[in-house]
Image (cartoon, rainbow, N blue to C red; front, side):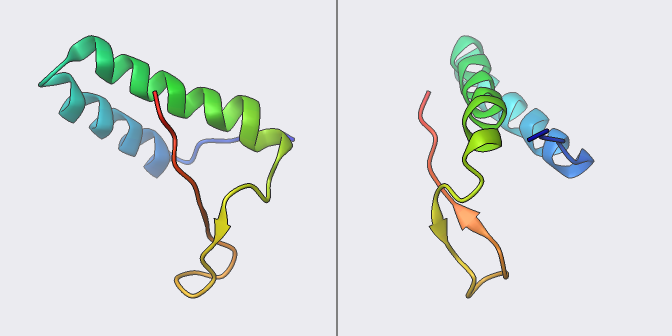
Length: 67
């Protein structure tokens, strides 16, 4: 499965990086790297991972990522 980051997702990652880097730049990079790795290495092969949140948006799934 090919994962494609939408422009809004790329913008969100940039905002996470900028906000987190104010306190700890190296930790901010680790967090964004962990998010990207999760999507590219885990989610691509496990599309139904996470808890279903259809009550918010049909097909939405949520999960936590730690760095």
